[in-house]
Image (tube, rainbow, N blue to C red; front, top):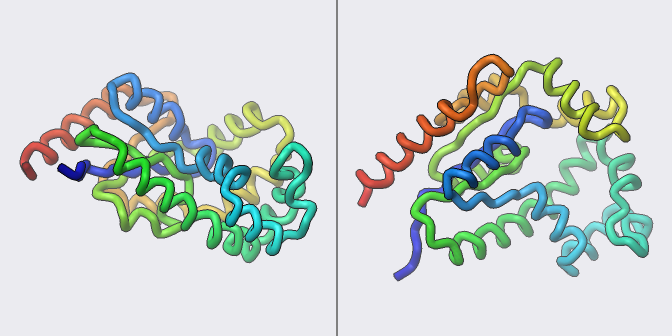
Length: 203
């Protein structure tokens, strides 16, 4: 019998803390598809995608070690138009990969983590959306600590290429506040409880 799980999106702006929420979900026993990590993998392994990236950004997009991330970052982060063009070829490849992953999952509830869930339109393929929000100063501090190669201007350029929280809150079913004041585990377990109740009621 074909598996038809409840598919839940986990999203939030860069530095909001999506990864820690997904670590909690894994500890609770749920499978999590990391779309952003998988996109990086596919950009190095999917031959059709690699060819499309070379055509769009030039042969310097790849070197002996694979995807030239530094070169690509310089090309896109200050150009919303180029970001859009890159997303237009990467997101469909990730969507296909996610579809295959879902088919192989046996869990009745599963999660997809993606920074650009709304921007890519992939939220329409999911049943519910969890948004992780965090104050801007905390987000910037986390990113600069995590990614010392990025400047403050680089971080702000990335943030400006993403939807603001108010726009995403209006489209989300649940909001988790990662502000270093509210505890995360109770927020996550409360959402999971509600999702399991919904899943049981639909059987």
